[in-house]
Amino acid sequence: MLSGYTGNENKIALHFSTAFWPNVEVLGMVAPTSYVCGYFLNLHKATGHPVLMYMAAGRFAHDIENLSDEEAVNFVMLQLKKMLPYAIEPIRFYHLYSFVFVLYSNGDFSFRLIFLTVIFLFQVQYLVSRWGTDPDSLGSYSCDLVGKLADLYERFRTPVDNLYFAGEAASVDHSGSVLGAYTSGILAAEDCRRHILLQHGISDRFQIVLREAMSEMIPFQISRM
Image 1: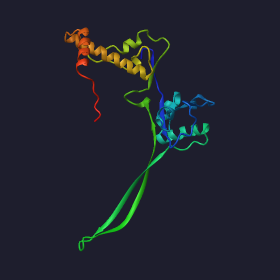
Image 2 (image 1 turned 180 degrees about the vertical axis):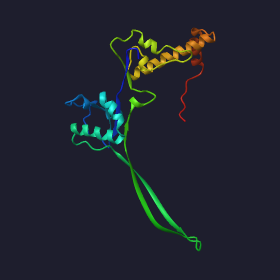
Image 3 (image 1 turned 135 degrees about the vertical axis):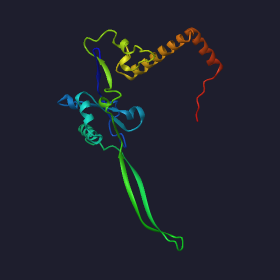
Image 4 (image 1 turned 60 degrees about the horizontal axis):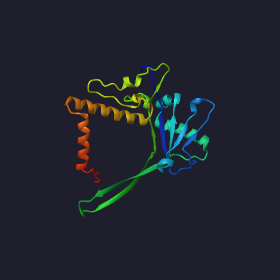
């Protein structure tokens, strides 16, 4: 990647019935080895929902992708209970399924109930990401290595014909972040717009004036349907 690097960090979100942890932003954990050193983001503080997000980084971020969702959640719950021994299991939602078998009689058009069976199914509320093996990403963030080219980000966002590139790896000021992905998308869209205007011989200054005039003529409305 021209002295760039794609890192991997996976997330395991756990939805509980109640927030039993301290009302802090981050729950960190120190361990004898870096392998199990991780932290939990307290999404309850930001959203009001009793959700903890475990951030798996380093070698564990790669190893977790070889585990099933249940195995990954069990590992994370072990780490959580080391910090909070009273930690409860993730919430389980139960679904009720009823099966009624009837016997039809041609004589008097009556129905007879034979028996009723009720089955409960549950679904544990969690989400496990696998960014490293996702064919559309093959990683979760970019970072610089020693010897990075000075114009690395500009090379990443250089258009090829009518194809424009954006993403956190193409952000000069905010690489490796959601903000970088957003701002680079705005820049790519602006470059694309200017290219189209030049193709049609339209002045960019005239386009700005036209947009301002149109905004005064047509009020902006949001449909609530």
